[in-house]
Image 1 (cartoon, rainbow over the protein chains, first blue to last red):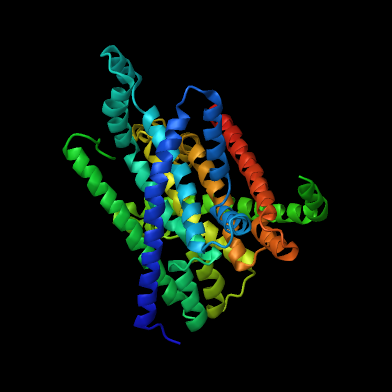
Image 2: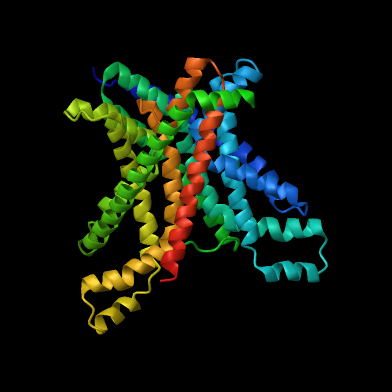
Length: 220
Length: 218
């Protein structure tokens, strides 16, 4: 059977679902990651260990296992939940761990002398956070942040296995109906490429605007 | 906890077997992916003078911007249509190699670019042959620069082997899925699989740390 324009439209709808899932988890994950980064720098050591444990557990296990774990255990402890909710939760948790490491790296990249000068100016702690740490750390972490955003789009494909209907699921569905493996997967790959490229371009555009204001440094 | 100890005595062996498969697939694919990445970089450098490097570039961009599941499905469902009927493990492994090779070639390229080009002039001026230059100048430095990043990539590959469960390979994730269906336990099998993945990841990280130390002190 041939691949029709209706099938391509289905793939486009799947791509939209993937994008929405990715964007939702990126925004929620960023918020969660900000809290986590705060946790990484507290004085109280056990909380720092908790942060490290979180990062280790999330980064050390495959997203698929996390997805299956959340999907099945939620069904036991919570009652039936939709795979979309489970998928969004898993993706948010996964992305938050990656973002937290990115932000932590951004804070650590601030030169020591700047901390000292902030202190010697007698800035209160909140002002140091607002005027020094946030602007600088966000500049340093923007390029790796964009990489993680692209990873989020790609990781959303894994959710097809817990029956979230998105681009990969749609592709598989159409393949099972038409057997046109190569055509369908080429279309799906094109959709993924466009989404990832668009995200990367948008991020770089944003970065360039920051650069024009003297905020970000030239990227090699 | 009693539940888990009962589990381990009942299904411990099948878990070990599945972990063995995961480890085997990951290590073979990792070795091949590093080799394939090196070949890609070599092709890129060789074709640069006559402007053919865009081909490798296109390959790398294509694989970097699509999820691993697509090549896995492409090879598993597509290759039988054109007459290559391979076992699922081979299909999945090949997809992992193709995808991770693209990443590896970029990592190695970063390491290669970090070498000051003056060194190649110096190597030439003391009369080193191209092969000797590669062996004594290029390779050790590229390895020193890129081994930590390669380690990260291999950990990612190890985790990506879980996706082969989608094409019927019985590795750790599939084993857990089978056990949930057989026993009706909702999440315990996945917890055990996750712990085994953590152990494998730790071993992998340790291995690369040792390797890095070895290369650095030479």
